[in-house]
Amino acid sequence: MVAMNKRIFLETAVKAARRAGRYLLDNLGAISRRDIDMKQSSDFVTRVDRESEEIILNSIRKAFADHAFLTEESVQDRENDNFRWIIDPLDGTTNYIHQYPVFALSIALEYRREIILGVIYEPLRNGMFTAEKGKGAFYNKKRIRVSEIRSFEDCLVTTGFPFRRKEMTDQYLKLFKNIFFKCSDLRRAGSAALDLAYLACGRCDAFFEIGLSPWDIAAGAILIKEAGGVVTDFGGGQKYLTSGNIVAGNPVIQEKLLREVKKVFRGILTI
Image (cartoon, rainbow, N blue to C red):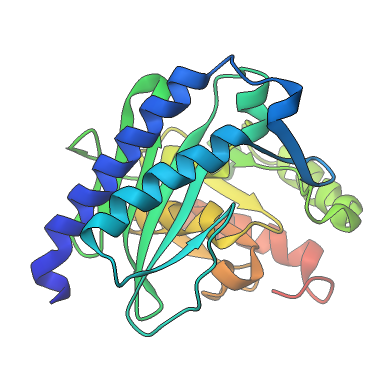
């Protein structure tokens, strides 16, 4: 059944992403203070997040009414043994509020607790990243691969500040400093989904972050794996969706970055 429906799964996710993406573009620059709520310190949600989510949910439910959903803003259905969609309707909300041009939406499909499909859409560039388990990763239908850089001093590393885990700031800054002195440069753009998508197509070489949610990671993780990269938690295992702590990169650089992460966080952070 999964094999038979994979094409339909992807088509449905891509259509939902494009519909929501058009809505995001139509409302860019039209956000007022009345449209913004704070979920927690430095973590915002807008009416646009909620409407984008509703567009995606409605699109998918028309095709797969019996599927479960895990979304950032509203629906957190009970995890079942079959299909569950993991959705971030607007990754980079703070950027979007300020019209800073780095935001995306993310859709992943999980089957029996394994991610089998991922879509990340960047509306401003009409950039559609897609991946299906065992079929590779693509950007606007062209095959993509992670970078081939092998030297850590030549690599570009992306990250995000741990605004959901501010108690980890000292350790994070220590890791940031250690990496900064060893790599070519570091970037913090404000959208984990796009950082992961860019890693999958070789625009950067590695990524790490603390305290992310499943909807931040799910689609990007399968993109990277299908593009030949490696994704782990801070301990080198596969519990990044539950821990929210992720280290990703091409195979050579990910291993080197993971060593740096372990030096700082081993014994400190649940991995």
